[in-house]
Image (cartoon, rainbow over all chains, first blue to last red; front, side, top):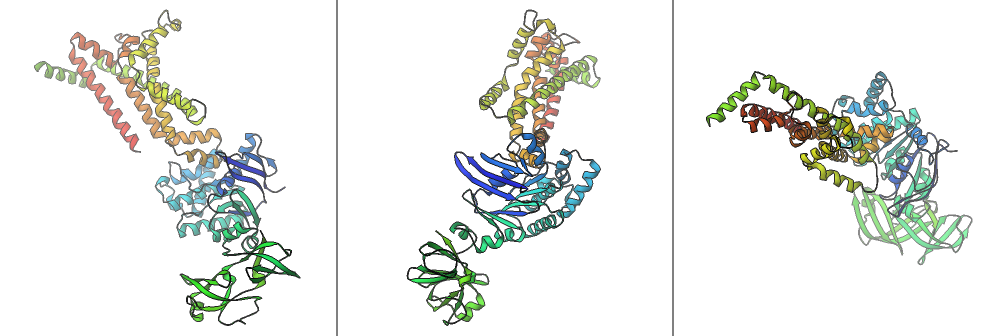
Length: 358
Length: 228
């Protein structure tokens, strides 16, 4: 059995379903990241996993033990885990005592406590602050104290709810470094939530997407970002071209999807007659001024309808019978002499599209 | 006017020379008020925690009732205790009428509501996240509860000080159940009321100054605590 396993977990709050039938398995040493829009139920789920809340229904197995049973079992499991809230609070004492609490509650010798607390404060870069009143620290510093007191007990599982939300880049970098160390050296199982896609990708070995209380998809980074399972996941992970159509022809793994009166070729196993969405990431669309610009199977004549410069990138919206959103560098935009109303060609490979059934 | 000045002069002399009667009464007053405050704390801290942490129907109403008793008249408590402990009362067999013990019992009853109420609001003033944070760091339920109480320590101390202030300054109860027996149950407030009616204003003024001084100390302590 997986290290952590939930079966059919539901959570209800004020008669509203917050979580719906969550089945999840996480192995020892995995770094699992829950992503999803705010209000999707990420925090609710991680709180159940961290044993702070009880699910309304469903079972939760921790290292093979069913924790929906007696409280004493939960207490044992809780002592093997640690949880860092999204907005951690510190106790009205100094930094050292804040971090030492968890060890004191486990009746560990004071000499050992001193050694371990000093070491962990060093690790998060707060060693010089040991005597400061914790309440007077800044948000990023409090977050670092919170991480320190969570890892000082050397938990087998570490739960982090948005560990770097609303934090300055320096503190974020420090915390990510500490997490990397935990992952590589202690093999700590880490379960975190984030709506920061890049962080999710940097640290995670596996992702789970929660949307409206449902765990819609779990998988590796590629599975989620390149092959999202449905429209909501696609929208959430930044697939901006979601085109509605119908498969009209299937030939050896290559399908033609009819959109209005245009055809898009895609590599897929979907059957003829199926209504589908074709997903194309903006960065996979190539623009050129001539029609034969490469090996792409999909080439469309188009007209620029909108240009939006963000930093070193230019996002362009074109009309080729259907609307496509693409992105080019400012240099490329200058070379192509892109302007509103300009006619050019948009192309993308059949392999860089992904087809999902409606 | 002359008498007034004279009174103050004698009063100061009584205080500065540590007049045995003044010292004796002050000492007893402090001992009784401190005992009742400590006993009330021992009752109110766990009881207040219980009320704060447990969810039960009628909790809001119970807290309202407790708050109503904040300003219960001392003589009403005196009457209640008198009826309980007098010879013919249900607890008359203890035979502690007109002793310091019964004064302590009476004061505990008198100040418990205000202490209880303030303990509850001290605990509600602690961030809800404290319990949960402690819990998530591996504290047992008891350890997490203790952590919340520790967070509220200054507010709880100020609740104790409030109780002590009410205990030391009340007169009706001490007179009714203590009996103002010289050298046994006579405290500052009862002494002042008796000596004034007898015309011995010097002792009254001296004791009054001491009581005001004690109130001042209480207030300074309270202020310090509330600023934390």
